[in-house]
Image 1 (cartoon, rainbow, N blue to C red):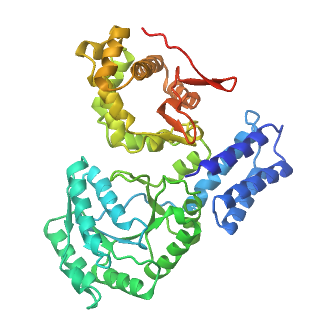
Image 2: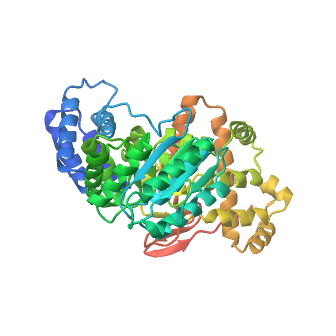
Image 3: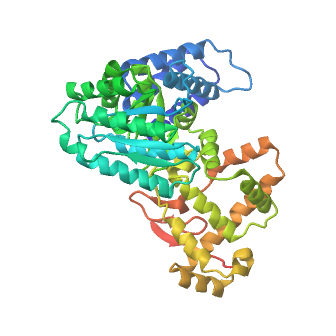
Length: 498
């Protein structure tokens, strides 16, 4: 989402780093470029102006430490101001308010096409991973397919998302025909869902209310009726991040009528410029609670201003990545694998098992974007998550002995594996090289202190990620041996097999 903005910030700080010291003139010059970058990212003009003025004021009031360069100091100042912009100086409680005894009632609202119903399913999946029992209520009777869609989502979450919780759906499909003929039909459905949720001692009840193509009196009247009838503990507005400032305007209009508790931004993984994420809290006074980062049911994460600011400035979001990993990997299992890797005893089966766990974490591109220094390398790179299927086919075409010891893989064995997996010998060799690189890095980091490990991970920004995909409009690249342009032609380097 923030590729263009990150690039603009990086260019600005690079120019400033060449200056010997911070002065009012060079700070204002840098902030002029930052202001242009924010406006291009569809940030509201008044917000961009206020942000830059605050950065200038903070910079001129700083005593520059001898060990810091002007560019480094400005990165810190801008980072702090970005966090401030997205939190408005308040300590917002992440996630949802937990009520005991339950159920915690969450009312979801939004315009049609914002991804509201799908987000209900994603939120249910997120809560199931945390061990909560969730009931989805199909109160969107305006769109006939919405009831069936929510029922399907509940079934998919229950069957495919691992977690100690349970997800069900309450619906009254016959009420769709009555909708529009009698006032309060959706209200009755919500009341009945609440009764059942209490009877079943459900932790969280999520109400999927009706949306419209635009904000109108009928929509707001129905939402107010539902709110009065069931008295939800929290009201969330789902908005499409791709609509930019229109999303912010919609949030303000909804908040004026309903007193929102938070906003959920969908399509956060798209190519949109990111202005809504930077502006919505400042304009509405309401925090962003969650962001949708993909199409899969587990592609929802809690919004962390610190992590987003860090990613905008190209520094990654290691805390967010660790939290994402912790949801899918057991601590004892991770410790056992680490010991294997440090001793050089990790097998191809272990490697494949970890790749499958990574797939469960969502988009590979989103995960890699949280690593320091790697975000810029991902720009324009199409990463195909289906490559894990190819990797699995290659590993399963190996014998048990070959999976334990890749040194056995000579030319004839690699040809046999390639034939058995429907790939080429180069793909097999590339996988082996990647596997050995992971093992080598793990052994190198084994003897380092915690600071040394963090420094080594930050250095991963220099990695060649071209093997993960293709550049848009370009030819595929193969890391460690793929294609290399020379004299206007594409020349293939020969590989040396073991």
